[in-house]
Amino acid sequence: MSQTSDLVAARVRDVPDFPKPGVVFKDIAPLLSDGAAFRSLVEDVARRYADQVDVVAGIEARGFIFGAPVALALGVGFVPIRKAGKLPGDTIASAYSLEYGTAEVEVQADAFAPGARVLLIDDVLATGGTAAAACELIERGGAEVSALEFVIELGFLDGRDRLADRPVNAILTV
Image (cartoon, rainbow, N blue to C red; front, side, top):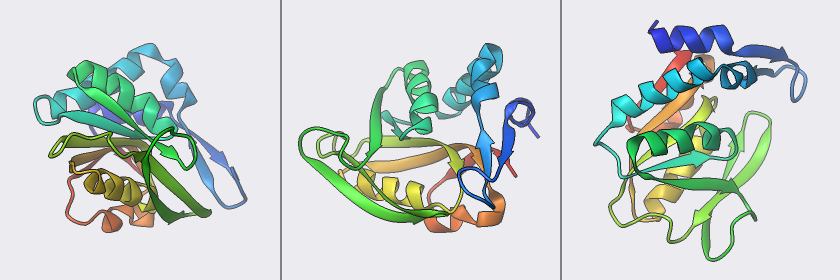
């Protein structure tokens, strides 16, 4: 394990049976409330992608928490990928299934410059449905997914399998 991985492991709390029985929710609140640990995580991610991306995209809602400060550290813009119906103007949408239901995400149609290199960030990689839908939006928007970054990967759910040959990194895999 890396130093950042150790920080994450020590500051993420398991909440059993949330949001429904049988699901173990990974609570990142203790990580976020520790300023030094949060800064270390953001700096670690930004260091790995310096000069490799043109924009950071984050998946609602916890991907915003990590993606925006990484974009700031990299000196690039941030694009929110939101739940359906939350963005004004022309949007493109993608539906997907997740471990306990179905959902749809969307992005503004003009969010990405043609050929932009995008770092996609979210907190947890579970089944990969949300991330795959977000990748589809980025690519339909004319950009390329340079890499996907997750704070936590639930390895037993094989979410990487849904992300094709895209580069995927998780700080902590459980």
